[in-house]
Amino acid sequence: LMPRSGPDSENRQEPPRAVQLSHDLRLWACERLVTGPNRRQAARNLIASASSHGIDLDMLWGVVGNLQDPKATKVRQVCLAVLGAGRTAMLFHSSPEHQRALGTRETQIQEISACISTCLEHLGQTPERVGLAQSLIEPRQRWARDACERAGMIFVGELAYMRKPIPSSGPATKPEPDWPEGITVRPVRSLERDASQSDRELLIEILEQSYIDTLDCPELCGMRSMEDVVDSHMATGVFNPAHWLLILRDGRPAGCCL
Image (cartoon, rainbow, N blue to C red; front, top):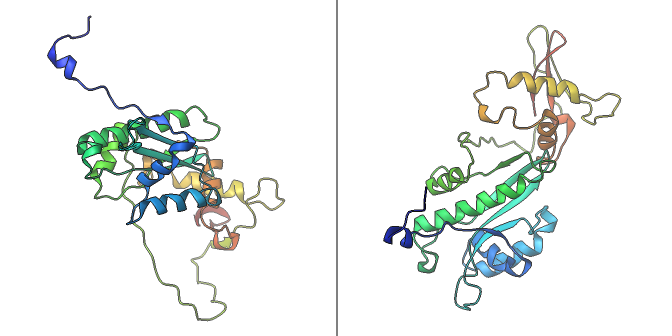
């Protein structure tokens, strides 16, 4: 087989290429990630506070513009990976804009997808650090889902955030609920692996049982070890074992509330 020749092949554009961004391009890259009226200052604020929030700006990948042209956009599109506990990475990427210099909306989506794809490729080279990469996007942002899926990511479902106001005043202690016969509910004692009264293995057993025939993002089952799952749960917010409840039925693990 030979490459097709002729006018069509000559006009065909090369696919966008993303690279890991150097230190001198960070400001332009961060400008593509932030929003607001003064994006340059917002980008500076992001750079200044990154380390205190566990963000490593070496984990930036982008499609670079013409660096020789002072008027050109230095970083066209970008993807940032933020590593978390439990071998996870959260991806943040730029959005298409109504800038003529950035090209059509389709061109921009292709470039965003290239940034995500290259980022995932590099993360895959260190499985000891990252076993699962994810991105949270607004349901209305169909372009974002398109860009992620083109990069090889899979859609696992829509999330609904539920909330309920908690009154600041009230009784210091609440009476123990009247649980059904055989049901015991207690907080975890410890989740440290080597603690004398660790409930880590018990919690893992409960979580494993909860994944059987689950309808809650079943695509995620088996992507990480249960040790990673527990570590990532513990790293969310401020871990307080008193707020992690184990449910036992006749002394056997039956459920949990974290």
